Length: 199
Image (cartoon, rainbow, N blue to C red; front, side, top):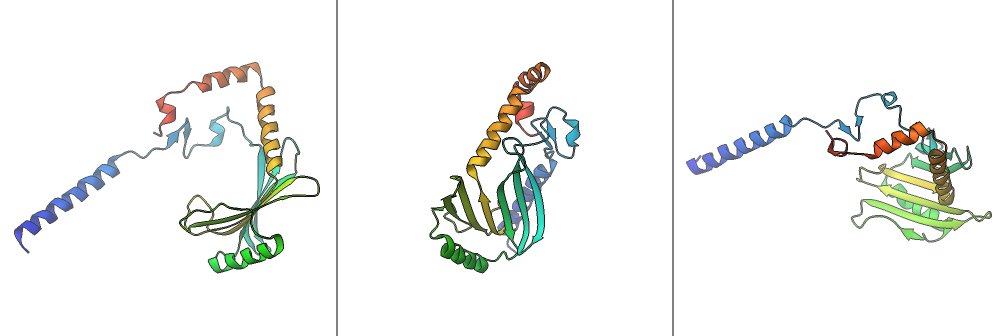
C-alpha cells in the first residue's frame, strides 16, 4: 500500500471516530414542553385527561388486522364519527383490487391525496347522505411513510361531526373552569426556551 493512500485512510478513520464520539457524547433529550419521556401522566395534574374524541381499538376483525373507532363525548356522546381500519392484506396487489372494487361501487374518486413519489397512495371520495351529512371515504396504501400505518387502510368519517365535537369540547373547556384554573392557564401561557427546546 502506498504511503499517501495509507495516510488518507488514517485521516478518514480518525474523522469517523471523532464524529461518532461527539454524537454519542451528546445527551439525548427526554423533555419538551415540560413533559418528560418515561414519566407518569399523573405527574401532570393540570393537563386535560381526554380529547374531543375517544377511541377504542379492535383487532382481527373480519379481514382487518386492526382498527380505531372514534366517537364523540360532547356534542353527541357515544356517536361514532370516524372509523379507521387496516386491512390484513398489506400488499400493493391487494390495494389495486380494493381500488377497483371501490370504483365499481362508488365511481371515480373525488380527490387524489397521495404524494408524487409513489410512497403514499390516497384516494378520497366525498358524499352527502340522506340526512344531509357530509361523508368522506379514504382508501390508502402506504409503502414507507413512517407517519402513516404501512399497508392498506380505509377511513370513513363525518367531517362536520368531528368539527362539532371539537368546537363543543373547546367551548366546554373554556367556559366550565374555575377562577383558579384560569389563573393557572395564564401562567402556563408564559414560556421560555426551557419549554420550547427539547432537553
